[in-house]
Length: 168
Image 1 (cartoon, rainbow, N blue to C red):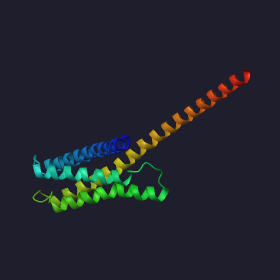
Image 2 (cartoon, rainbow, N blue to C red; image 1 turned 135 degrees about the vertical axis):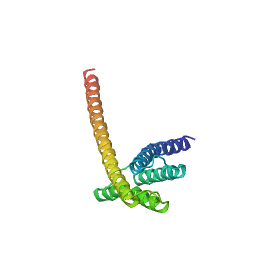
Image 3 (tube, rainbow, N blue to C red; image 1 turned 90 degrees about the vertical axis):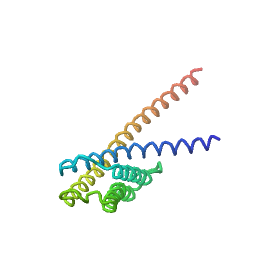
């Protein structure tokens, strides 16, 4: 029973991570798309288009999560390849989905608007990757410092216990 609960808890943690990233991706896509449409002279986005962006954001977030789903240390080149995949798989899906569903058809200067949208999304995915990396590096350093402090305290405690035993 414990094993099942641990697996469910781990899956739930991964799902929450993906949901948070999907919300961010989806918000950025819809906001950017609406902003560009507003500049082009329209102030509406279709429900179907927003739904497509939401599903894309969820899929992109899960792809990103699956690339680093194991809690382990990756080699230098493996990490770099996974990081590139973390950036370019969602970006490629964004371009592909936008082209397949014709997000920029019927918009004045649709091709130019599409290029700007895709360029900003590429910058977003790159920036998001490096911000996440920086957050986790900072968090890892903080945890390592706490672990060193705990080990030092444990060493002192053992030394004091050994000293008390010798005095008796």
